[in-house]
Image 1 (tube, rainbow, N blue to C red):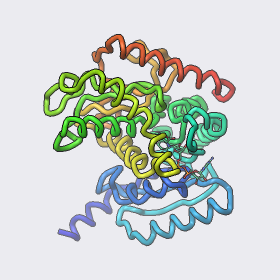
Image 2 (tube, rainbow, N blue to C red):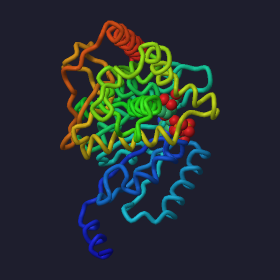
Image 3 (tube, rainbow, N blue to C red):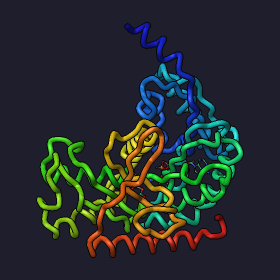
Length: 338
Ligand SMILES: NC(=O)C1=CN([C@@H]2O[C@H](COP(=O)(O)OP(=O)(O)OC[C@H]3O[C@@H](n4cnc5c(N)ncnc54)[C@H](O)[C@@H]3O)[C@@H](O)[C@H]2O)C=CC1
Ligand SMILES: O=C([O-])CC(=O)C(=O)O
């Protein structure tokens, strides 16, 4: 049995997965899980391409990460490229998780790191364009993730813009958890049809109006006061709450969300709705085009598709307007990089 499994595994060609900021705290939580097959499945061998800043401390830390990956003896890990050379890091990659960027500290909003981080994503968009496979699927984690993904896409004209996504999954999972806790669901997985719209920021709109638990409406079982004054602000401010508690931003949950984002995109959601930051062009909700916006999607055969037909009430419409406005402001602030 064991021999047969090994044989089956070895017949699948490895894919190349780039992770930037690989020696950072999210990288540390993410890499063993990718190498263990949690992102692309238990039969998919991977070659990891790890990018770090050209800085002796960062590169020494990266060397330590590589040693630990070796020491895990992951059967699916077929090679590691660890480098500060961006073109090597993106050479022929099938997937790119763009994590490396400055995190915010206490009291800051994510947009406060835009000035420092935006330039990174211009350089990385260009390098992906030059070196990655044209089919590369990109998930941007580094903040502010939506606008950074838009910058990378704008600088990679040979790669379809729809291949650039930003991570809204942490917000989605946080919202699911809050609902499950509130209504005593036996498993978070029972919560379905939840959406987080807009920006990965304090203006995001976690929307439970269509959510169900085992087919029963969530909205009908919670009061509006809780939704507006507890649920939405808790999800919007969860990142800040974690920074306040830990002194540094979320890492284990962020890595988990990145794994789920890419896994669902590649392996499919089986009809379940998830939230992904994707280009707004051609969306059926009338959201202004040219933005990277959190939408409800389902995924099948390696493609995501926006779920149509959900409604916003007046409160929802106001929330959507605020998050569009913020994304437009972020876009205006980086127009020199687009
Ligand atoms: N979208 C989301 O839901 C979330 C996003 N984040 C964001 O993810 C980013 C990374 O967070 P952490 O891992 O906690 O930060 P960290 O500071 O622990 O690690 C970042 C790593 O990136 C490296 N780096 C910086 N610039 C780079 C570049 N140009 N090329 C390659 N590597 C580079 C640094 O040397 C460092 O090792 C931050 O911007 C953070 O705000 C964090 C949590 C959730
Ligand atoms: O809040 C932060 O700065 C890190 C992050 O994006 C999150 O935890 O959602």
